View (cartoon, rainbow, N blue to C red):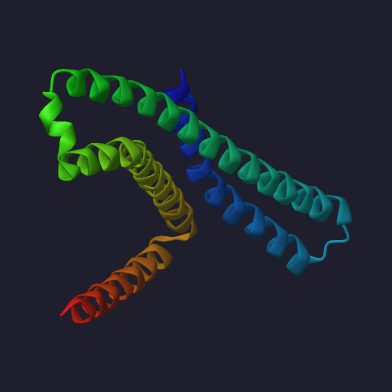
Amino acid sequence: CQMVLCILAAAGLGVLPVVTVKLTQIIVDEAAVASGLPAALGAAVLWMLLAKLLSDLLTWLNKMCGLSISSATEIETGEELLGLCRELDLAFFEQSDTYDRISRLRNNGRYLYFWGMNGLVVLCTGVISMAGIFIILASAGWKVLLVSLVAILRIWAVNIRLTFLENQ
């Protein structure tokens, strides 16, 4: 249940940038036309504020889900680690290296799952956002999409090159 809630929150966080782009387009179009309908502009701004509120709520929910799952994982792995430690001879615990390794494993085990979970959330959110943005660009026309793809590929190429040079 917690995992499903985390996935739904991540999906919502992925859709919200697309919604924000579309709402921004509507606001700019309404302001540019200046058709004398402030109600339409006001409604778009209100939807934008609600999207921001929903974004903050989903971010908080995502953090809480991650902490809850991390805590449950810590308990499970802690019990498994204690079970394995019970099987060790007492002589192992007299060595400071063994005790330090067990202590580090116990203290850092929960963070590994938390980092992995956050990585999956970022990946899911990014993929959904990119797909939505490409759909919006494609709806604007194939030329806009093509120019945007070329620009993105050039930015990625520069980024990869700079990262490569930085790591040398």
